[in-house]
Length: 470
Image (cartoon, rainbow, N blue to C red; front, side, top):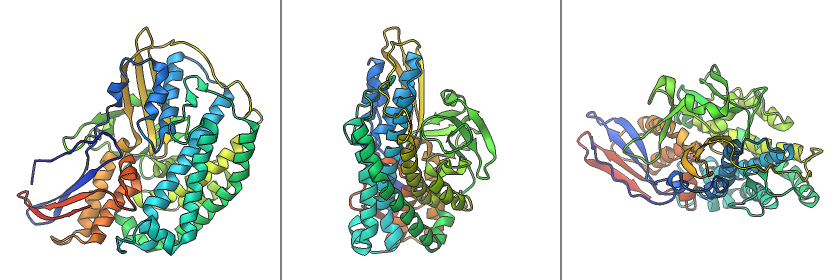
């Protein structure tokens, strides 16, 4: 087996990736490895900067979900300032984060995964893309565009820009919501909720076509982690951390988010720049766990909105071990997001002008934890007496899933690869395992349904038997 791994660094996490599949002496798959070849340098960039710059700086990590970093970073800065932000600011932060989750989930489901789900895993790769979806089912394509556009519009109306808004700041938000913008958003939500419901109905009817994929797409026992609310409900902004096994048995219950380092540590592998977080008591790599929409719904007792709770009841009957069900979880969360935004916009104090607490640094350490579209996002900062960053550590949602993604593609490769030849359908299914987790890198490296991938089949001596590149 080859011990040499070639990595070509790029500057963005949403870039190229590679999968290598290693065969044993009997020609059977021994292991598949997912290589992330980007170096994330924001933790070092931050050193020496004033802490109040962190939300805007950290938002630049990602152009797909900048709001997620704004929220987690601002929460860490709130702790550095030792302030309790105004209640209206909390609600508005929740709304913009929910809009981020909705638009990002729509991108993942409709733009990146629906070609497989509508056209089939073995369909012609020249047509297996969003253009092919638009030709085969124009309504499905339009619905995806509509839901994503509304999520982005809400972000723009609140924050001033669709990408990298500077609205979420240390201590709250920069300015209040206007009645005009509130009413505009409320007028658009009923149609979005209706579309989310219809898409859920369509997709649940497709599940029986993918029974084989469900059985081998990262379908194994393991741990799940997310924030949950005080009553165990779905939570995307605050709450406490919960960790449970695939049966729902609690391993960690009601852990304050600021104490996450007591249970989470990170490992580094030579084949990837993406770190591998794990649950400390079980060690590495046994402490593998999953985050994201599948984990959030697996760990929640309810969603907390009427229509999402109806869908949640059906979701609870499924086998949550399969990563294939990330797709369904995303659709339920889109429905939940728009319902919850509607509920929050009807709050009596939503137009209150008191939306920011002002203070200097009053603590030397701050933690910020929230739920990004892809899972639990963690920011940890330390500052000196002048309020300058001396230490920054981030655990990105995609990183939490790193160990599970690697185990998932190994499971799929062992199931589908039966000879020394790779078909496009096999390649697509292995890639589709990664898509279920919706890592940031796969989102930005897709180009009309394709993801830059290099899959190699190696003999036990390290010789390349077959290779497929995109």
